[in-house]
Image (cartoon, rainbow, N blue to C red; front, side, top):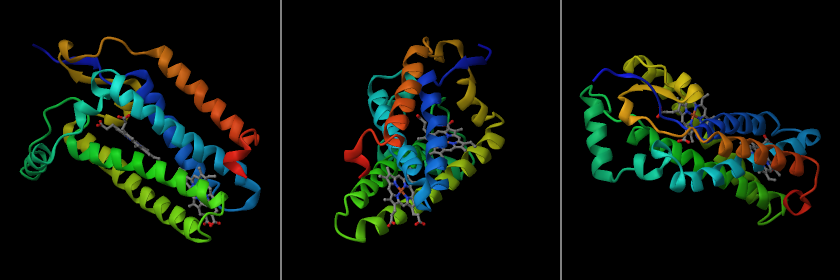
Length: 211
Ligand code: HEM
Ligand code: HEM
């Protein structure tokens, strides 16, 4: 059967991804200087809120959004690494098992950054939390660089633009591999929730998180 352009990434996954990019970059750009402190907290906490949403969506979301679809055991992951080393591409349409490990690590690191940021604000354990916060942020940045490089390299290798797939949700595949519902309403609600969280933190309306 001929392959055609089919929907793989639902709308909430795409909204999650690009709002996460904005939030992470925003938090980095506002990380120095007291004048931008509330902006920094707003970007940082809304990044964490996105990850919390994604954890739920990884259980109840559409086919390729589910953790069960892309988190593989050590045997299958090793098998995939060996296949990669011998020049074989991953046959699935969703995230490949190695890429998925980096993405999951990034999500965990973002939650840890949020937690250590919160503890820094609460002056818990003196300077230790501020140091941990900065160190984990740098580690996450290194993972982001690896992730973006992999997305570009894999796009050339697979001759399919994975970055535009993350925008349009579409990839080349068989019609029966497509997901049926784009879930626009959930994506829109996610946008609203992100904006609300950003606004509340930035405006100092949740003082228990920021002071
Ligand atoms: C993705 C999210 C975040 C990233 C990437 C990030 C990154 C950073 C970085 C790189 C610094 C060090 C700035 C410097 O002095 O050179 C910093 C400082 C700080 N961040 Fe975040 N941050 C994030 C989220 C948060 C959150 C949610 C909070 C919670 C309120 C927070 C609170 C702070 C505080 C209080 C400092 C000052 C630490 C100190 O002076 O030791 N950050 N952040
Ligand atoms: C702050 C920066 C970034 C973070 C934290 C991040 C994180 C993630 C996460 C968590 C996923 C999994 C998506 C999901 O299943 O919900 C993902 C996928 C993806 N990201 Fe990013 N990302 C970042 C920046 C970028 C950028 C700048 C690009 C483009 C150049 C990019 C391209 C992609 C692609 C193509 C995928 C799908 C990979 C695949 O086809 O399996 N990411 N990213």
